[in-house]
Each structure stands twice: as C-alpha cells, then as structure tokens.
Length: 480
Image (cartoon, rainbow, N blue to C red; front, side):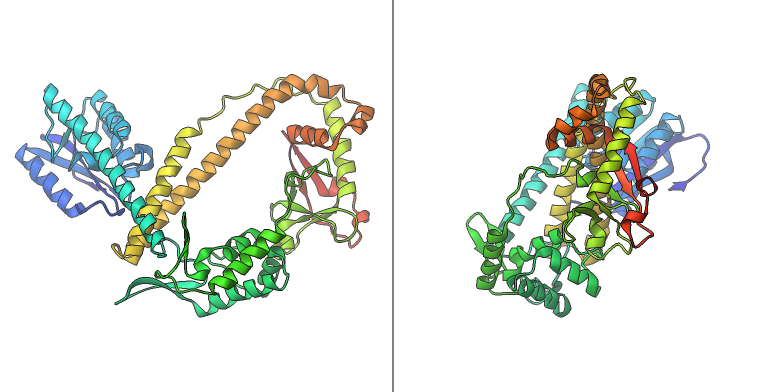
C-alpha cells in the first residue's frame, strides 16, 4: 500500500484487483493509470492504493486482504470516496457486490467506477446492477468453457493439466505441451506393478518404499491408498478415462501397455476386500492415537493376540510407533468408563448451534473449479509455468484452509449432536451395570465408547515386555 498525505481535496481510496485465472487482460498498471486520470478530471486526490493480486473476483471480501483493509478504514471515516477500474474488479459475485456497496454507502463513502461512472438515477442504478450480473455471467461462461476444455482433452487422451503425476515430466516443444516419462520415477512406478503382479499387497509395497527412502511427489509417506490410486490411474497406459472407456493417443507417454494395465485392474477386482463386516472389538481403532506422532492406529493380529499399532509406524514413517495389546487397552478403558459414568456429571452440557456447512462447501467448490480452470490453461500452454505455480500455490492454500474449516465444522456438528444425545441419556448411562455391559453386543459397546470418548492416546512402551508397564502410565483418555 502507498500512502499520501494531502490537504483539502476529497480523500479517495483506489482499489485494484488482478486475477491470474486467465480472464484478465487489464494489468495493475493500466488500472492505476485510468483511475488516476479519472480522479484528476474530478479534482479528487488518491490518498491510498489497495491491491489484491492473484485473487479471484469470486472470493468474498474477507478473503481479499487489501479489500478487507479498505472497507475497515473507509468505515472508520478515513476516506470520502472509493474508486475502482471496473465493476468486475470489485467482485464477480452479485451478493458480495451488493454487500460491499452497502457497507461503503452506509459509512457515507461515495463509490465510483472508471468504466461506468456512478449515476444516482434509477437508470444508473439499474446499469450497475446489470454490470454486476454480467460479471457473474462471464465468470460462469468461463467455467463452462474450461469444463468443456477438460472434456475435450479427455476425449483426445490428453493430460488435463495441474500437478504433474508421479512418473512423468512436463515438457513443451514444437510438438506442444506433453508428459514424458521421468526415468527414475517411472522405474519405481513400474516396480510397483511388478510387485503387485507378484502377489504383494499395496500395504507391503508402501512399507518397502518407505524403508528404501524413495521420495514421493510431495515428500509425504507412502501409504497403501496412495499406491492403490497410482496403480489404477489410466495415465500409466497413456490414456484418459471417459464415458466411452479408455482413450489414448494423446500427449501422455505410456508407462505400461494397455494389456498390462488391464492385468493390474483385474487383480485389484479379484483382491477387493468385502466391506461392512461385523466389528469384533468394542473400542474402535479410530479412537486410538499414537502418543509419538499423533497418527491413527490399526489392528494387527500377526503376533496371535490382537493389538493396536501406529499406522505410520507400520508404514515405516514413525520411529517409535506405539503397540498395545487390545485386551490391556480394553480392560483399562472399560474400568475408567465405569468410573466416569459413576462420577462426573455432564448433564449441564448445552448443545451449541451447529455451524453452517453449505457456504464453506460452496466456496470450496468454487476454489476447486478455479484450480481446474487454471490447470487446463497450463496444459494448453496459455499461461507460463511461473504463473501457474504462483496462482496454484495460492489456490492450494485456500483449498486446504477450507477443508480444515469444513472438517472442524463437521466435528462441531458431530460434537453438538453427541452433546445433545449425551445430555439426554446420561442418567441412563449412569445406571449401567457390569452385568448389563457384559450382555451388550459389540456394536452397542462401540456406540457408547464413541459417544463419550473423544480419543485415547497411547504412549510408547519403554520396556521390552509390554506387561511390565501399567496401563495408566501409557494410556490417556480424552472424554467428550
């Protein structure tokens, strides 16, 4: 921001917004020159400039730092007017557009645009409203054009853009933009197929990759889910999946033949596990967390007696992954559960109002859509790699923030529902006896644990003999 101190003239804030999603052809410099010319004609002096760069006009004001600062200071009386180049620079969402205008006008601030000067007549107000609607329409048209581009790329067997998949490198030459095999990464990707054909599971492949220190695309640990998704990707056959089936012959160099790819898919179908089995243990493993890395645990029966082990440790990514015998865990948690039911009362819990998920989910959908448009433009070569990486980085951070907010909101909704249920049934739970508990089904016990327990944190064992450590030393229960 650039600040100028002046005397006398109407104090004016100027707002500039530039998005690198491809729909913009008006640079910040052009916007600034036109705003300065417009203000000189009216004898206004720009006291401060506010710039939002690499930000979409579909984002709400609170997600655009410069606009948020402008609104705050304008409402504090630090300016008499706000000027921007064009209405779509202010916002591409009519709801946001009207909210911004209302907040400024309520503060007694004049709002004006270079492209369509303010006119207080009914006709002038109508033209501003129409321009806001047209900005939204153009944004939707751009989204449709880019979705059509994605479908066209898929129908031609061409890469759709975005993050280059593991095993390939993006090149651009006289033949256009294409994906060619990365020798080192492609070698490991072929190795995954060979091991899978030899009978290895995805989990065993992931453990071996972690043990060998093979770097993944994003420097994260290898998991069975990641290996599974990589094995089934049609890119490996140099193809894209469409409604008509696999389409090849595009700009993706194949890693394996179509026959080899079909072989992998057939093995996956044959090895698919039957889901929905009746649980055999009352304490869900998802409630049990590793006290070293904080990661989830999973069931391990390789030693005969069932145990919960750190999932990251099982993958070779946690140096001191915890292991605890299930019977030890159940005995201790059950004992603490009855102590909890007979002692502390939580009937005073007041369920909080659940947060609104729909606005967050809609905003996430818009961010994902814009990332798709950005990827398609990069694949077509219409924007440079530097522009793509810069804009993609911002959108990726925004996507992660929204996913965290949605996850937190979902947790609050679940907590609210559990709190309401817990408040209504606590007296009944308090009457629960050992005899009744012993007669309950595993599913019913799981329901009780999930209702009253948030998580169970298990610390690593310092002794070679697991039985030498008292459970209360290793286990910490976080109640809801």
